[in-house]
Image 1: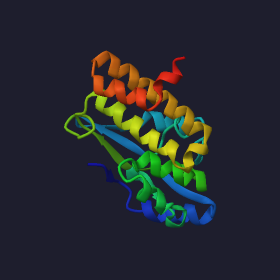
Image 2: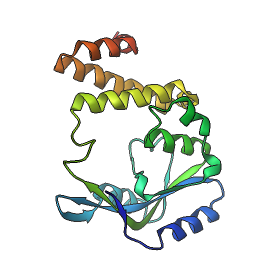
Image 3: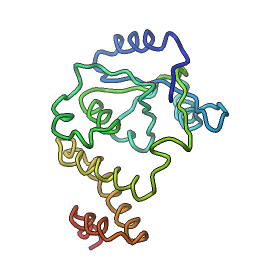
Image 4: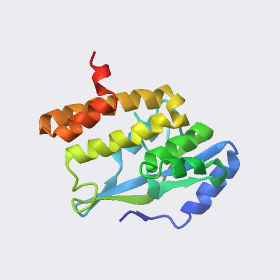
Length: 193
C-alpha cells in the first residue's frame, strides 16, 4: 500500500491551506515504488520543474492532462465537500469524482515537497483488471460525473466523450456484445456520426 514518508506532511498541508482560504485541497509530490525500486515520480517532477518548483495550481483545464492528484498525498477541506454527490452517485464516486468536485468549488495545488510513496504492483486489484474492465469503470465514472452538476463543465463533457469512444473501441476489439450494447445505449453511436 501507499505510505507517507514525511512526519510533518499534515502540518505542512494545514499551513498551506490556512494561507489559501479559497483552496479546496492540496496534494504533495511523491515517489513511486515499483518492483522494489524507489524513484521520483518523473511526471510530477516535470510539472513542478516547469513551475520553478513552486506550488503548482491545479485547474479545471489542466486537471486531467496534468493529473497529479494521488489520494495518499491529498488533504481537503471538509467544508468544500459536496456530500450529496457521494449519496447520489455511490457506485461511481471515486477519487477523480471527489477531487474534480472539490476543484470546482475552490482552488487546488500540488506542493513540491515529497511526502509519500505511491506503490505500483502487479498484484494490485486495479493492475489485475483487463483493459475492458478498466475502460468500462472509467466510462461509468465519467458518465455519472456528466449526469451530476459537474456535467456543466465542458472538460467533463469532453472527457466523457473521449472515454466513451475508447470504451466502444475496446468493446468492439474484444467482441463483447454486452459492452458494445452498453456503449450504444450510453450514446456512443452519435459520436461517430
